[in-house]
Length: 213
Image (cartoon, rainbow, N blue to C red; front, side):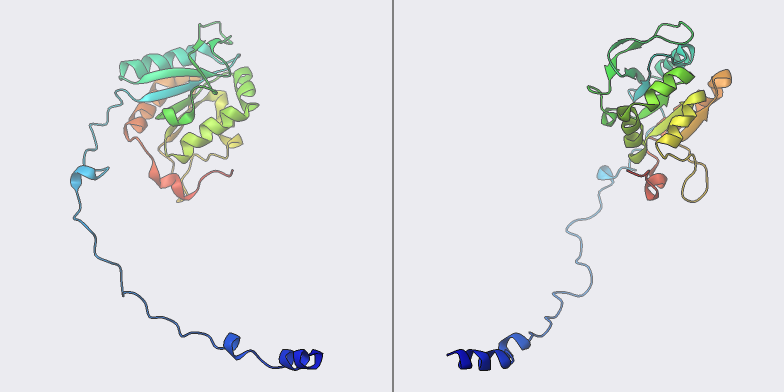
């Protein structure tokens, strides 16, 4: 039996050597669509009037932020019909660098980025430093950027963009219209640009270069 087994091992397996012929393609070209295009289902069918009524805008805050800039942003957004919400590490009062009153109405735990159409990163070096040390804050900003939402970084918070690997330019080299760097000393023009960018809802051109995970 041992000799027969050795002889069998030396012979090629014809069944295993024979491969089936390649089957022909089921069809040539793409199948026809099941239905016709429906303008009513198109995202571009009703582009709107460019307003930001009822748009949800997050304003990140932590102890040490500039309260005056947050107040200016809130007032402008409310006048435009948007719904601004201050988001902090926890609910409750935020100790601002200029003594202006600020209250965090949501936290990173109970108000995820997916609920918002845009985000404002405040001025104030101490507050920005606290936000920079929170992984939840970085994740919040990155998620809005990945979904094509509008971002306004005021003053010192421009450093948060770099930490989140967010560029102010598109892959084409052109400026990203949805990433705005503002200056606390002349916030009004930046707010007008920010509000106009929110009115576009999404900035799909940036999807070719998402930030690193």
